Amino acid sequence: MRYFLAVDGGGTKTQMALYDAEANKIIDLMSFGATNHELLSGGFAQMRVDLHEMIRQMLDKHGLSPADIHHSAWGMSGLDTQTQYHIIHGFIKEAGFEHFSLCNDCDLGIKATLPEGYGICLVNGTGFNVVGINEQGARYQIGSLFELTGDYGGGQILGQEAIRLTYMNLFRHRRETILTKLVMDKYEITSRHDFTDRVMEWRDSGKLPVPGLAKCIYDAAALGDEEAEAVLKRMSLEYALCAKSLIEEIPFADDTINAVLIGSLFTKEWSDVPRRLQTDLKRIMPEKEFVMHIQQCLPVAGALAWALSEGGVADPWATAMAAFGAIG
Image 1 (cartoon, rainbow, N blue to C red):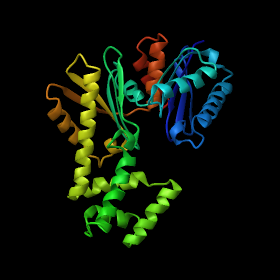
Image 2 (cartoon, one colour; image 1 turned 45 degrees about the vertical axis):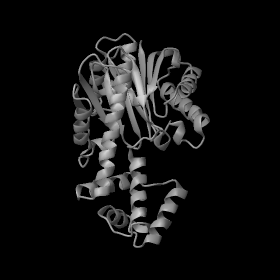
Image 3 (cartoon, rainbow, N blue to C red; image 1 turned 90 degrees about the vertical axis):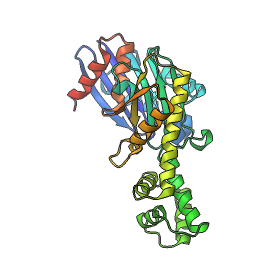
Image 4 (tube, one colour; image 1 turned 60 degrees about the vertical axis):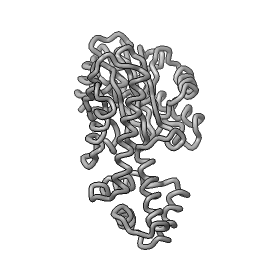
């Protein structure tokens, strides 16, 4: 029997899918906690322990060992450098896997959405990431280190911008803007000094309400707030410039390029950034045509498609999509 293991390791949750090639179906899909070392209090040491325990639970449940897995594919959040790649690669090999593929979890957006397996993926969730795989399989990644690399996108950055702009309006400009009012009302803050106290609480607890603060930026821009509008314009341009840099690094043979958008700050119904991004891409790269795709299926489906491809299964993308469709 041939088994394949697909893994999507994220900053919030990790999903593992076990596929039986003879039965042509997924025999298990399990969800666990985070496996991003950057978000775990114990860093890489905790990631190693947690990841090995997840593997044990999945395989022991079916009486299997890593040696029984024909091929596995791992898309891991927090894998952004060669050093990180080698560390995580070592954890997987230590667990007993011999035949496996490893990448950043952003790659799974391409693998899960585009049957041909190449294109670019722009992530605007908690963090910022731009990843590309061209027709020859060359890969390039920009971003993911937040302020350290000048990333300007993702909920973490937008949340900080909402706080910064509100603070400046309360303590420097001394004027009320739509954004300031939205932030104050959303968190039931009634004075400038209460705002400072609340921000300190968020900082000390490590529980910055990123989604809510980012949404305030969007809502304020929709109501005509110039500061919030400037944030969204800058964010869209940043993604477009990163896409241009990526395409210059790993050229695509076709002038029509598929772009997968991932993350709530792209995909929510209240987000107009895809429209802005399409305009910026066309302005910066008029010779290219970008076809936008919103990721619809689970990223772990992309990991399965990749594992099946590396394992020699015919039509791996269609097989993986049908397998996940069969389990709802």
